[in-house]
Amino acid sequence: MIAYLIGEITETYDEYIVLEVAGIGYEILMCVIDDIKLSGQNKIYIYEVIREDAHDLYGFVEFMDKQVFKKLITVNGIGPKAAAAMLSCYTASQIVNHIVSEDVSAITKISGIGTKIANRVILELKDKLDIFYGELPEVTEIAIDTTKEIISEATEALTALGYSMTEAKNAISVVVIDGDTVEELIKKALSILMT
Image (cartoon, rainbow, N blue to C red; front, side, top):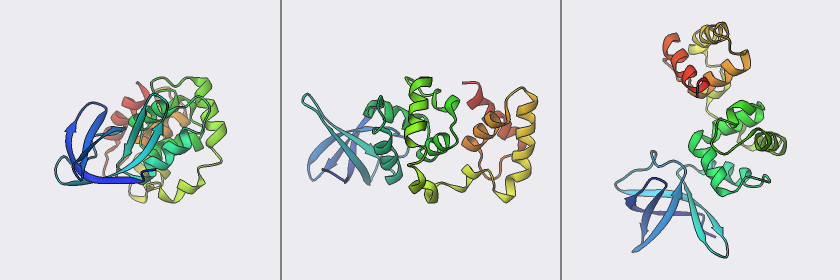
């Protein structure tokens, strides 16, 4: 099995790249293409899917993405394509947060994932993701000292608009970055809630 490949990207398409390593071009399906460097060397973590009719390489810029992908495909009903769709919609840390917080509504926003599958993902994985807790960025904890007050105000504004406290907090946890104003945070959270 291939753990990772290091090489130069020679071609990019909507869903995959061609990575040249020692004169060989590898076609790699990528969940997120935006994070790769188009010049110079790239280290791409690989997960191989070998079937009778295909040999697919799924690529990840971050090791955690690959690990979360591997967890997702252990769930009955989640194949590599569905897991890749999840990682193209949310970051790995956001997916972990949505599963641990049992946020069905966030998971069902992913194309092709219905309520039944979302509940199964939560049921099967919520107790198996503790290995990732140390890798989650602080923003997901909604507890950054410098933004506590802004988060509180934005949460109140969203609940005043009719969203539940859980919906408001989950949306904010996805979009918050240090330095946001209340207005910016509300706008970004609404873009999640209204999709």
